[in-house]
Amino acid sequence: RFQLLPSESQGANPRSSKSSDMARLLISSLILAVHGSEIQVVYNDYSFAMVNLASGLGECWGDSRFGGDCSSVDFTGVTKVSANARSMAALTSSGGVCWGPGGLSNGGDCSGVALSGMKDLYYTDFSFAAVDPVEGRGVCWGNYRYGGNCTTIDFSHVTQIAQNRFAYAAFSASTGTMQCWGSDRYGGSVAAGGGACAAFTGTSLDVSGTTQIIAGKSAFVALNKNAGTITCWGLSSQGGDCSSVTLTGITDVYTNGVAFLALNKNTGSGQCWGNTAGGDCSAIDFSGEVQIFSTQSAFLALKPGSGQCWGNTLRVATVAAWTSVVSHGSTATVLPFFSWMTPSFLSAGVDLAMEATGAPVEAFKALTSTPRVELSLPSTR
Image (cartoon, rainbow, N blue to C red):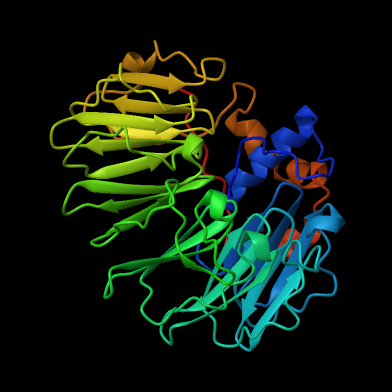
């Protein structure tokens, strides 16, 4: 789970110094530059875990209470790794293993969960869900209130699964139905073990024809791209209520977590809803070739030669320089970058980053020796 911005506190005290923030960003840049699918890296607010799927080696570092200690974990045969807010889980060829806080609150204990044959992992802040889409099976564990109980969900026809911080949604294209579990306030279900999704109005949802589920932090949006319509549910103040949206012919939906943007790219029109950190885009011009980017507090609509931002005014950067930065007809890749992070600093900074976060440097190098690891650096020009 890649998250470059500060997260809400989960009860521990993560390092907040500039060196720690720098190290997290360096690690994230390194993670994104790893070649091949053999290496998987996940992290939550407190810890990192890196696993070499080919060699079966794994290392963890950070807060030992929240996944930073995996010294007792056997990574042999691991096929997939995931992390929620406080715990970590890995699927293996013969089952699975979890570490971090266990019990009913977090998901760090999956010793009694039947994980054999599971292929995919999903998570909320305090639970995990493992699914075998071929056989149509699924199991959940962790905090029952936030998705740890899916005993009544029928996974046999599920084609899409999405999760927000506290709930899951699963759509079956063949039956045109949506099943939810987790907190009803955040779009889950009032039924124990899951069932009908809890709409903000308490009414049933019309989700037939859904082509994509878009999950924010606390709400879901089902997009029917063929009909150009959307259906929303979850926390109304963060996007679960889209009754004010009048846009038709919707082709794309974006979220920054607490607000949503619906676009009709054929007409160049858009409409936003949800939290004030992006819920009003009435002054934004979406015509022409546009790319959408977001932080947790704002959106950026980027065009060749221009850009427009909206959201939390305290965290929205000016874009006066976009004309000189983005040439006509170019496709932009926007990455977090600071002026003090020069290529020479970054290329020499991997060990520094590992040391600043308490990482086992030599073990890291051994894990990443095959395939080769490189840093892909943004241009400073």
